[in-house]
Image 1 (cartoon, rainbow, N blue to C red):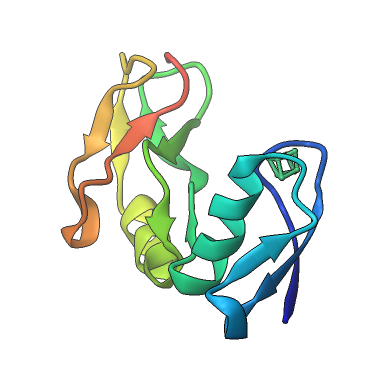
Image 2: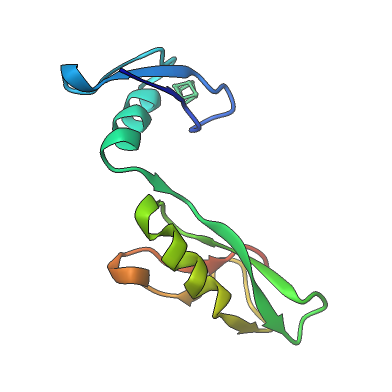
Length: 114
Ligand code: SF4
């Protein structure tokens, strides 16, 4: 049995996931907790948020994020990729700065217009 806190919404339900019973989830207040609990043990993913350098803008860093959750084991490589990006103003919110990163269908996008 694995104990987890669901991070899908601010309620933060305390979940128990039973690996010996087909990853049955208890403690959830809604079906998203079941999805999160199973996914967290079988294939954990996270949306990555960070900043990149930007030239020609009023501030030196542009907030960015992945447009979908990325497998957790790829987060370190994702951060290296993000550290290598320099955007040039103007950049618009949602604009793709790196497409299909690390062999996935995940993009790094601007989280702010600058
Ligand atoms: S189980 Fe549902 S209500 Fe509870 S934290 Fe997760 S998403 Fe929110």
